[in-house]
Length: 308
Picture (spheres, rainbow, N blue to C red):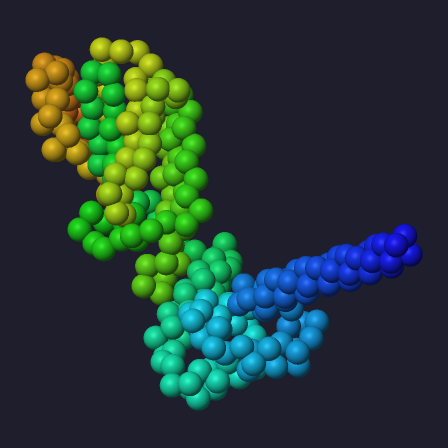
């Protein structure tokens, strides 16, 4: 009886060992299968192909039933990473299955071409190739702020750049600078708005932002509140011919600044009169000098005639 029980225990033990190793073997097979699926999904094909191209091509052929469902992602991956032989093989297999892929190929190609063109355009021109342009601008003010709008064009009435690259902004107490690059038609352009202001601003409270397509706006807070600026730029700055008054914004704050504009106009009128008077005095002095010279010449001529 004891011997029989002992044999049964050995058989049970052998069975359990067999079952144990059988489960481990199957578990390993499942893990291996999962890992294989992970390696050969379209997301990872471009990584696996460099290690074993023939195995990968076989896998695609043997698993087209599964891979055809993700044809768009496969096509996109092959094009993105320039795996042309794999793409050719894959499209051939899709054709055999009667699966349409033309639209997916066009989408992926256009995406890649757009990205390549963007990179190419960024490095197509050297700094010397860019035409330097002062962009068209307009400005207005209220008693606490100065508003500047820049159009990315050389004139207000001409088409401009809709998008700027490498746009850089710099604002200081009496200084505003905007620099950006764009391609208008086939012409590379460097926009430079770089001027010293009439008075100081509060840099921390001032704002700047894209106001609309092809336009950029500065809202500059005056350092000294409740003040009126006679002009936007410093006295020593040359006012660009394409800088104008921002009439729509000016009308919005007309009640605040109308009094100062009257005083300013009176002062401007007086300045005009003073300028005219100075010019007339210059002309008078010049005329007197000419008369004096003519008198001297006449005296010399008369003296010569007397000597003769």
